[in-house]
Amino acid sequence: MAGMEVLEYYSSDNRKHWLEEIKKSDWGAGTYLYELLRDNKLKELCGAATKVLLLVDGSSLVSFCTYAPQDDIPNTDLTPWVGFVYTFPEYRGHRYMGFLFDYANELALGDGHQFIYVSTWEVGLYEKYGFSFLQHMKDVHGDESRVYRKKVS
View 1 (cartoon, one colour):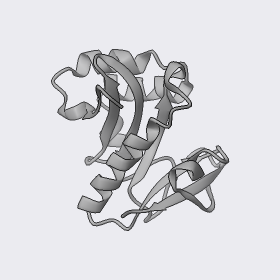
View 2 (cartoon, rainbow, N blue to C red):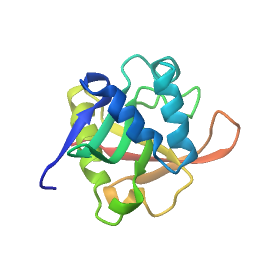
View 3 (cartoon, rainbow, N blue to C red):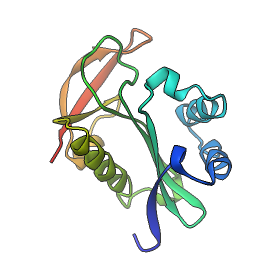
View 4 (cartoon, one colour):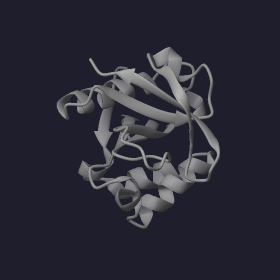
C-alpha cells in the first residue's frame, strides 16, 4: 500500500482529474457513476451525505466505491450502502478494495451505524472482506439482488 491513499471525491481539490480517471473504467456501472458525477446527480439519487471513496496511487486511480444512504434497493431502512465497487484490472488480485471497505467502516462507525450493506449479483467476492449474505431483495429495476452486510467494528 506504499504511496496509496484514500481520497473522497467531493472533498478533493482535483475533482476534474478523478472524474476523468473514473471515466476510464471498463464497466457499465462505472460509466454510469461517471455520468452521475459529471451531471451532479449522484447525491440526488443516493442521498445528500453520499461520498465517493477513491483509492489512489499518486495520480492513478486504483479502486473506487460510493458510501451512501441509499443504493439500488428501494424502500428499505437499511443504510449505509457501499456501491459502485470497482478495481481497475491492473490492480486486481491484491485486495486493494479492502482499504476502501475499511474506510467505509470507519465512516459508518462515526455515523453510529451497526452495519454497512452492499447490493450485488456477485457470489464469493464480498465474503472475502467480511460481508455475509443477508437476503435477496428486488432492486430498482425489479431484478433480484443479493444483499450483504458487514458488522461495523
